[in-house]
Length: 199
Image 1 (cartoon, rainbow, N blue to C red):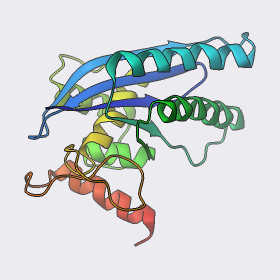
Image 2 (image 1 turned 135 degrees about the vertical axis):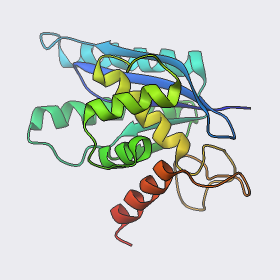
Image 3 (image 1 turned 45 degrees about the vertical axis):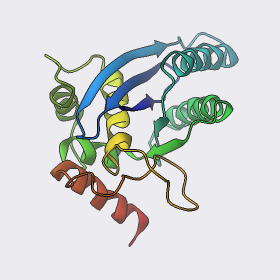
Image 4 (image 1 turned 60 degrees about the vertical axis):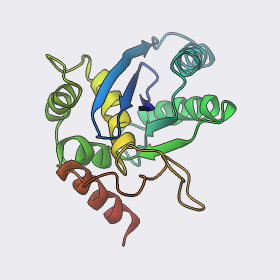
């Protein structure tokens, strides 16, 4: 039974959403990917409604076992940060209403998961997403590839196999015992996560 994760690259103008299925052998398959769009001349509440409705529609259509959202700690553009935070809140609300666990991952964690390098650029991420999912070319625009990378990151966090989550910790459930060795990309992701925790 595949473990299905819906990944979100939050943004007010473009919100990437990617859905992947991951098998016990860590093979990832594309289920769906799209970019929800709004324009700057729309009232803020209408922009949130459009994207929120789109996210909820995909949650109901694909019924993921988990949702993963990119967490942005700092950016120079304050308006961008606000938009990301607002869309993240809408996504968190939609997942919570359905009882779906949510994981938040930093860009460096996502890059490390899919490329093995926490400072990879968008081209490298897109190329690896295409390779992982067996696609002929990277998904476009970049928001689509980023959303899939976020979903893959969450699914590969501990091998992509659901079991009992660690006590007191929210997010993607941990890997079942004896499910196989960690891949180099997963090892890089775990190293990035450990560094983020300051251990």
